[in-house]
Length: 193
Length: 47
Image (cartoon, rainbow over all chains, first blue to last red; front, side, top):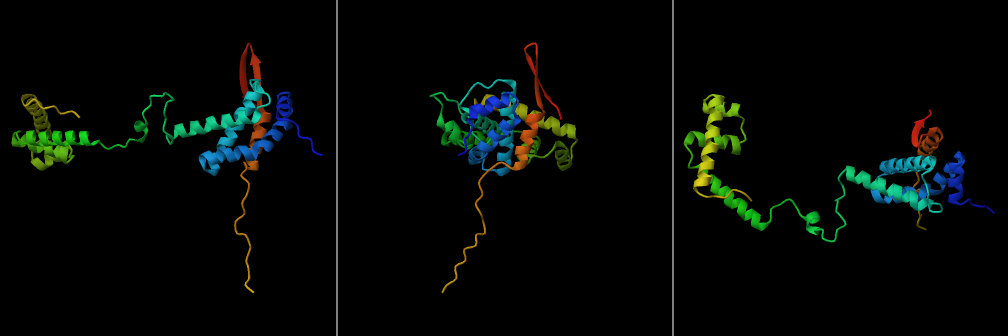
């Protein structure tokens, strides 16, 4: 008949300096803990890393004499592993974070990046207003603004394309923006979504 | 009679941490030393 020493006994022996005790504990719970970690992370290498970190923490805590959960060794180890798994996912942003308040909004987790119908309409309105106002600008300013904003050209490229110096192109852009602001004010247009 | 081939190509192995990981942990345990001075604990690794 094989008599199995209780976890709590092994923990006690380990704290007293018996290194064999930790070996017995690791081997006893190896399969269960590995299975638990693997079921959460689904990656063999990562499971190995988290298993290692878990027992390193266990060893440190036991050696420091900070363990006080006699008889509940495995749940304690599982909790350490669970926390390390959460830390891993937080670091890699794979799990959405939500607080435990009752008022949390599920749509803040499920929402996509797209604008909703109302905001989409507002955006279209703003775009139309802007295009209309740009057309009211003097032609040289209009040209620089379109190249810079819509064609994403650098001022060097604008200067090459229009045959004016970079400073002139910069000046035209500056005046284009000043005049646009004046037009926005004059027409009482709200350009925010 | 039809031949039945029952050779298993894949064996299901029990998920367990590798022996190297266990060895590392045991070595870590042996080398870790905690000393306490004036209520402060210090960790040192005696390799």
